[in-house]
Every structure is written in structure tokens, then in C-alpha cells.
Amino acid sequence: MIKHNPPSPEPLHRAIARFGQATVLVVGDFILDRFVNGVIERISPEAPIPVLHGRGETSTMGGAGNVVANIVSLGAAA
Image 1: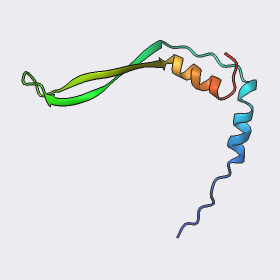
Image 2 (image 1 turned 180 degrees about the vertical axis):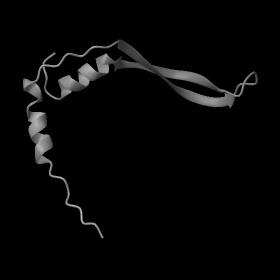
Image 3 (image 1 turned 90 degrees about the vertical axis):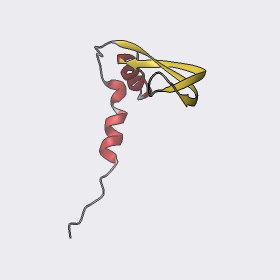
């Protein structure tokens, strides 16, 4: 039987504490992610795909924009 020691969270906590001191350059495309919420009530007779009756829509940052938002949430300055 192999005995495993649980990992210590301290190295991770120290690394996260230093995030505010780091300089980061994000290179990539800023993408707008759009999500349509709704109800599927039937399958299309023309093709075997669901027919969505849209009830709402949300938009969020995607691509490099999502990466930047995550870095800022960890304490970096934008």
C-alpha cells in the first residue's frame, strides 16, 4: 500500500499573495461570449436539432478578456 501525504496549501497561499507584485502581459483576442437561455419544446422536422425558444441572453468576456478578468480577481492591477 502506498501512503500519500496530503499536499500543504501553504506554497499555493504564498504564490497567490505574490500575484499583486507580478507584471503580466496578456496577448490574445478579446471575445464576447453570448449565452442564450430558453426552453426546448420540440425537435425540428427539417433536421434532428432542438428548437430553442429564447427567454433571455447574457454576455460575458471571453478569450483574453476572461484571462484578464481572472488575473485581476487574484489581485493584479489592470
